[in-house]
Length: 316
Image (cartoon, rainbow, N blue to C red; front, side, top):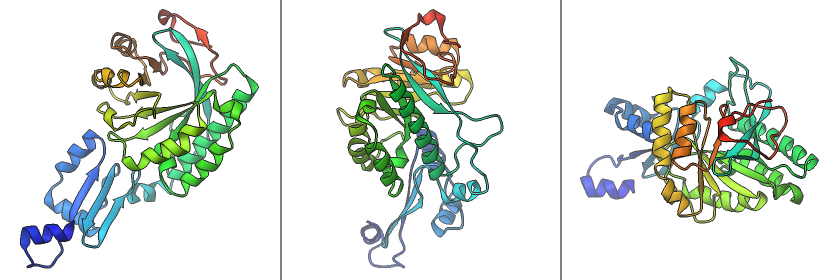
């Protein structure tokens, strides 16, 4: 591509050094990248300046395509993160609430941190945390045949070599009686789901879980990128921002509800913390909600139970 552009733009003259920088990320990250000055772009190309700490930055040249920053992390972030020791994995359970039926239909296991603790710092840390949660969930399901649960699966853990093989081995070992009651909530999905991740989701995750959900951080997630029959639900994770910004983003996401419902995909909000967020979810037809205003964090799974909307949150 670079060689063809060189000829088309400059003919056969010059140093044959034309290249192209590409960046993929969520909407805000892309907008920031488009405002970078020429000096910084040249520094990125030459390796003087590190790439943005999030998203995917690549350089396309005559020698091929080189990734300056892998998806979900960068060399700069990894270098900084190596200095931080991962905290112990602490796990709790929150109820997953169905708004149409006003019922807790499942329980999701999730990690939590104490004040001042840093989250996972590397791909290996994320994978270790998720596998620890998977083991805990399997034990809970084996001990209670009436329990239904969700576990988190990081998208990049199943999309990247090395990590993918570990996931494949662990998922294949799940007991059959557990699989039919266990869902995989795939998180860290970017705005436009990469085509290269569809295969691992379809072949590695979907066969071993009763349901596959996507947890997205971008309210403009492109629903059309989802193949039919892949996802049971798409959940928007509310950001750690002021309530006004959270409501605006929740409204934007739920405004695309018809795109999902027409394909039999449920939609919902995660991280619901205020009455206005819960009210918005109900008014705009969300199917699923979860978060501190819906359920406290429990040491044991939340059982399937009816609870009127007015009685939320579920407490111990």
